[in-house]
Image (cartoon, rainbow, N blue to C red; front, side, top):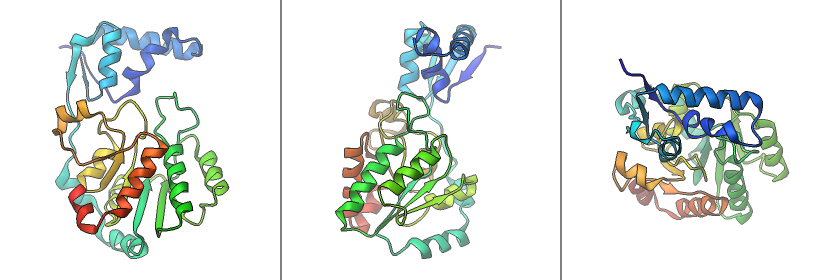
Amino acid sequence: VPVVHLSLGSEVTQLPLLLFRRAATPRQRWAALLARRALARTGGVVTAYRASRETLARLGHLSKTHLLGFAEDLRRNRERVDQQHLAELNARYGAHEAVFLWLSRLNFRNPAAPEYKGADRFLEALTRIARDGRHNIRAIVGRHGEDVDAFCEQVRDAGLMGMVDFVPHLPYWQVLTYLSLKNAVVFDLLGVEKGTLGGLTGEALSVNALLVMAVDRESMAVFYGPNCAILEARSADTCYAAMRRVLAMTPTERDLQR
């Protein structure tokens, strides 16, 4: 029976490359060596990320790559949405022009880390929208990740504590319920190399949420066709532009973008 590795990200894209990296710790180098040995024994690597293919090519294992998207269960995901809780959330947030959701991990102080998702860029764009002073918006941010305290401090320094609601690390059904808010705009993966759907992004699209993220168009076209409905943002500037674009849309235009 061949050994097949289902790759979820950095254990293939980043970890094997730490072996000869000057700043790597001894533990990271040992883990990188084990990862390389494991990939050498593996008969196939199933991945959805272009960065994984690039790493495997550098290590001489490109022929082992098998591209496969990670499907979401649309019917069951929508059934998991708690309709009573959703009604309460819509009553609470329905008067806002938009509710910007950041429910990914708050790991942002090291942009070179594989766990980086761009929460700092989201916050910079949100700060600029708030300073514009033209829109009635709200942000919901999940309190989980290594840099939660640092993020909260930056929110306070920006004077946005009255605009941001923090929620704990939510169970799956509750994540889907928040993503289903009628005026929600979901932000994730800003400025990272992955740019393909996984985790929160797939869940957001499964409940028909409006999604803003970095997009690897090449990989997305393979799995989801060339016209997957996502607004692209990789930096604070493009995230701010995406926020402005959403706020300028009519309800009909937002529905067409989903």
